[in-house]
Length: 79
Image 1 (cartoon, rainbow, N blue to C red):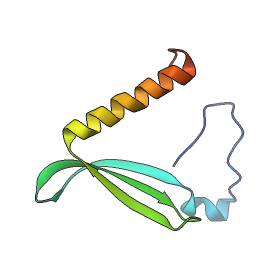
Image 2: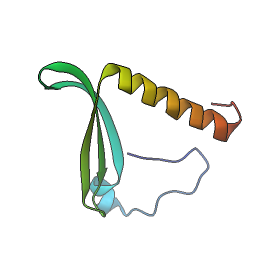
Image 3: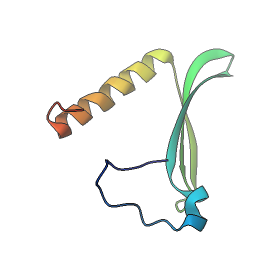
Image 4: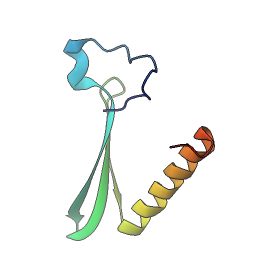
């Protein structure tokens, strides 16, 4: 489930809606021609979004580096 840093305001979700909270799930898979891939599932019930992004290991590393670089830019190097 997507969340914010500690001390940030909570998402406006009722306990009954918790199962439909937006989120990103990442896992290793071999669904594309049995080749090793990393799948990132993006889910948001409100926008009717349920999408699998299949990445090669190299693409997953590039994405991870880009995400870390963005966090470092925002946080001033503090993680």
